Length: 207
Image 1 (cartoon, rainbow, N blue to C red):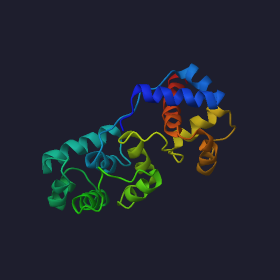
Image 2: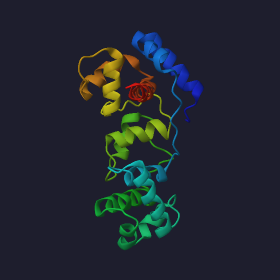
Image 3: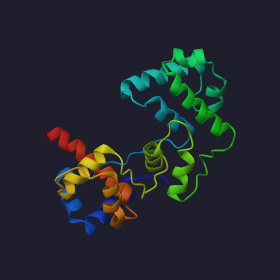
């Protein structure tokens, strides 16, 4: 499923009908655009490459990695690369290990990214088996690359901050509180996260 402006707008309108604070947030910030990433191995590899570095640094490493080993959409490329090639591209020993783990999961058939379980929690469970892919990364992948409408990244700091602001909380809600708050927003929790990121960006531009 690929998220579209129409489907995202419909989910946001449903949220606005459930929670007046979301309606007010939409009035302030407007409707966000969908966030769409490519489905499959390369997007998860980019997630590993981009951990704990800036967007510019991640792109630089990705470009060097392509130059060193070739086609990064094929997991066999990483599986067959030498440690020297991975290090020359800027991957730390830990990230190189994570990249090899992902490639092995895909090439062995243990992870089939074209047929992840329909149940979101089961799909998350399969993804977090990969070294270097935690719950947040798995949720972001399912939300953006698979367009799953009810994935809720409750541990995301910006989502916590902005949902707290939108709902008028004095303090940033903790992850457990975020999950409790969002129960009434099913099956549109993914749209709530996208609105929170959009609203957060607008807030930062105003400050």
